[in-house]
Image 1 (cartoon, helix red, strand yellow):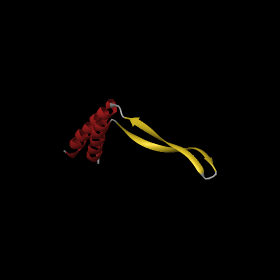
Image 2 (image 1 turned 60 degrees about the vertical axis):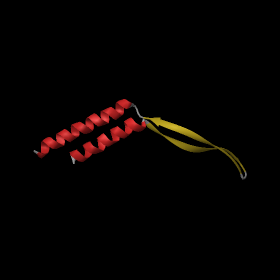
Image 3 (image 1 turned 90 degrees about the horizontal axis):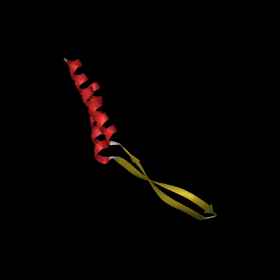
Image 4 (image 1 turned 30 degrees about the vertical axis):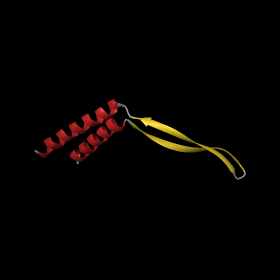
Length: 72
């Protein structure tokens, strides 16, 4: 179980380093007068720091080593 968690953490860390965040679009309604609707699309970005990606990789590798020691 610890090995699986380690693998997942390493994969998430690599993805965080490669993508460095993700962007999504949110539609906001500004006004509505009868059937007339005024709205706009707003693009938002959530960044991932490289430190967080490196930390996930380090914790994942540590979990893999701990998993190997318990199997012996």
